[in-house]
Image (cartoon, rainbow over all chains, first blue to last red; front, side, top):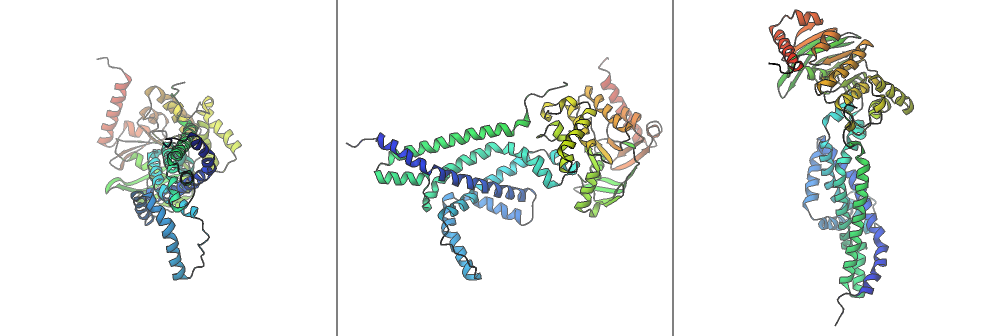
Length: 241
Length: 255
């Protein structure tokens, strides 16, 4: 009778999985960073009701949140090159896409997807800041942009941080879809290991543990960061001192 | 110093200001009185374009801005020459008392941090908060927050400070301290436009008292002219109401 759980094999998968953790973190980090920039731009376009851009932004957010991430990955990987090829033929652009690695399409798809969620978080966080904060900034002569940068956004960050943490954790787990277009990150490596040893149960348990540990660490880091960013909220008010 | 001419402003087609003319001389303290909804706060906010008047001229020093076609550069110039003290203080919540006062000096005036810190400390000292420099607004009482707000406004060396009901959110026992700070500013020759319900302050400190009702200026003159010789029935009624309610709150229920 075959063993239910091959412990030596199970343990042997960890070093193999550990090798690709950096790639998973890299996808997460790059996508989160780009998505924050995109999300901020989209949030501002909608908040300030910039004509055309704000309507485009609304359609983008609706589409990105209303379609499966996997579909977006496929559209990025198969669709973008087709589109660019067509543009190349139509306008005679000199583009060579054959050398673009698959991971670029992963960055594209994840930035597109996460940017939409972050834009909603950022929009809500900015709206949560009292209007008087911007008025005070303007009243001492700051430009609206400077007031946003120095007064409103730092406070909005404190509001948005817990939600950013959730998005980041969801993103870590979603990177497991990258193997669908043959980027060998954690999940991809797990599948390859499982196929090689013909033992999938052990390797999927192992990869689940690795994801779990990564997420626990991120959670801790976000909590620490939150404490730092919220320092101004202080504790009990000192009255009439 | 400041001259407002023909200021009109509507919110959703409801006129709030109906052609306001007002002149404030250098070093003068002008107190604007009036029932709530009379447009006094809106008028104040039109001066620095926190509200944009629909029509009218705003003159400050040598600067003349036509509200209907003000350019962003003019608006920011106007805001650099004025500062405001808000009813709800509106201190920058993410900054300490010292940083609140320094912020404009550094990011608007481009003052080096060391000099800005020195100046901000001096201003906070003047309002009696030298020992609260590193406190965040959430750690200060309302009266302390408002004094930081005044320090922030005066640090910018504005040509005029606009006060929008500076004591209306405060506990009665700390109102006096804030008014003292404002009197000190007036003595130092600061030009001030003050929207308030503090009649004592108006009588004692104002050079000019303005009574507004329903988007218009009904009465303007010295405190004595307005308080003792009001020409309009509405002014008299308002003053009686306010004086009575002030007396009520000053004397706890005896009857």
